[in-house]
Amino acid sequence: SDLATLDWPRRAAAARLTTIATHMLPSQVTEWLATGTGEQFLADCASYGLAVEHELHAMGELLPRELFTYDPALFRMDEEGLRTPQGNLCPSNPAALELVSERAQYFTGLLPSTTGRYFYWLDDGLPMCRCPRCRELADSDQAVLVENTLLSAIREVAPQATLAHLAYHNTLQAPTQVRPDKGLFLEFAPIHRRYDVSLVDLPARLEGQLSHGEQLEALKANLEWFGAEGAQAIEYWLDISRFSGWDRNKVSALDWRPDVLRADLALYAQLGVRHITSFAPWLDGDYVARFGEPPLGDYGAALLAAED
Image 1 (cartoon, rainbow, N blue to C red):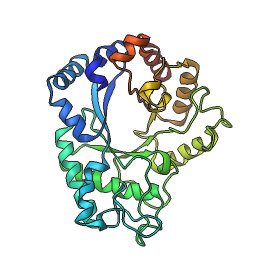
Image 2 (tube, rainbow, N blue to C red; image 1 turned 135 degrees about the horizontal axis):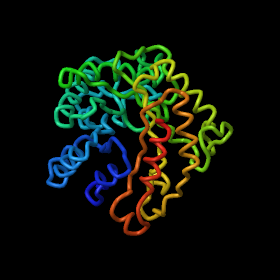
Image 3 (tube, helix red, strand yellow; image 1 turned 135 degrees about the vertical axis):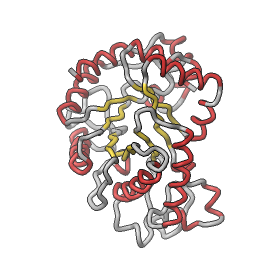
């Protein structure tokens, strides 16, 4: 919806950014890109030389919830030993893996990434399976098991594809048992951090969350497991939705902290993370009308400076 009300390609190109990613559900993005506005967005990105990726909350559509009525065993088991349609699959179930693979192939055909990098995320922050066959694997290991399967499947549609492993919330800690196949890259999303100070402020923490230092230790462990090649930080420096508590009635002007951005970028560069992006939901036409242009020029300049 942000792309429908704001000329993001022109602004991104002016800020010397390289890539715009759509976001939310695969079907939503597919339907929007088929509209005249969506087609113009793709044409504008191509004319400006901008890559287009799709960072997708995918599992709810790779494993449609209505299938629970017909085959509960496709879905995860909770701590009480009950199958539940509330998020994620059973990675030990071959039929579940086959189903989500076929659905991922379908959406890969509809939503090609111009970089070859694909993002099919598990259900947002929800636990993985606790069935007898899965319970010995941590959520991060179960995620890799699923992602390896998805990667193999989508390469039948896009042979050079790579796929993200999202280190986020319950998968923030590095896997310890399931090795990633070649082509699976790390995507680090530290949503539970502070943005008034940099990640280099190691004792800093949000109440009830890991400290910055603990989150960095998780990042380092993930980099050891996946390698730094292709690793990406997906940050929240521009995310109005997060800063508003995901409440449209609480939207205010972005509290822009360029010093925090620069310190974070220097840290990521030091660790070998070269792909950097930021969520920017709700930076749309309404936001610009109310608060003026977002600091995309400053953001782009900081990225370029960090690259140098």
